[in-house]
Length: 87
Image (cartoon, rainbow, N blue to C red; front, side):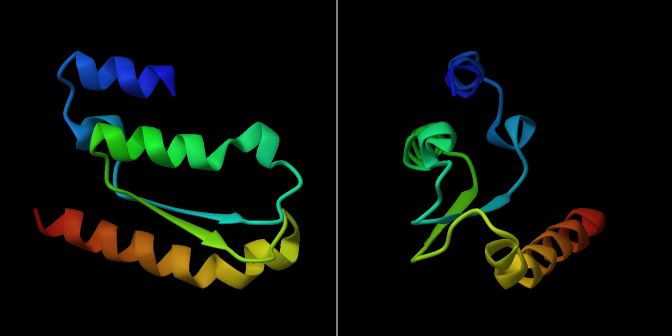
């Protein structure tokens, strides 16, 4: 997270730091103490980056969580790639 703050302070544009991103986090994720999703969400928001965080109630870090939202991520990135190709 310090790297994001450093790049923003140096004047690097948001798109150069990270492309539009979708992040899902389960509210029952046993790895949250390592992931620090809320801290990351706040940092990228403060930096003005195009990151969409979704906190999914009751999900942990299991395959069930990943498979439940996989289509959303494929659709999100396909839309972004199509838009980028037109530019």
